[in-house]
Amino acid sequence: MLESDPDHYLREARLGVITQRVGFVVWQLQELEGIAAQFLVLRTKAKKGMGVDAGQALVRKAENRTFGVTLREISEAKLFEPELQAKFESLLSERNWVVHKSRASSRSVIYSDLAANMLLDRLDKIAAHSLELMRAVSTLTESFVIQHGVSKQFIDRESEKTLAKWHGDDLP
Image (cartoon, rainbow, N blue to C red; front, top):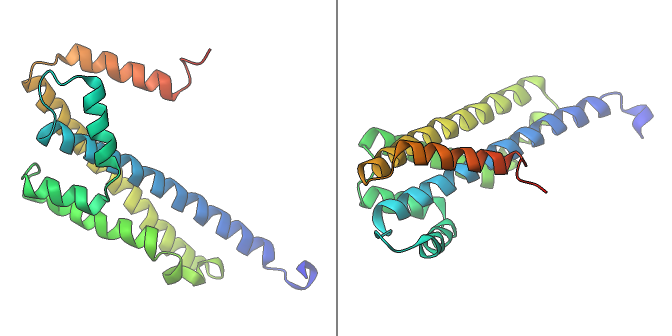
């Protein structure tokens, strides 16, 4: 009964904060996985003149593979400098922990402020690491496409269109 458990609401609130943060981290990781898959396709599979539809089909196929497979293919193709590759490998380990083991290894978090704060700090670091890597891959992608004749102005226009779509500015 709730009347006999004065900490019930505290535990419930803690759990809400934690699950919200886990959800955000998973979203960040999904975005990074998609960016990495697109980068892999751009650098290893895309061919000049292949068309948007064919390119998008390759990206969809790449996005269906695991993050570990994508990173292995990027490593084999030597698309990242060793330092960046190491950062991705480190994040892959943390990603796998979040997705597969974080709940089982964090059962005490709803009962302890210290345990909850330690988990939240770890999740925040994973989210920040994901964002850092997204930015790094975006920079590499932009440099690559500019070297292959795409103008910075075109990239900026397409980015603005994407942001407008994400913000719902293109809704009827």
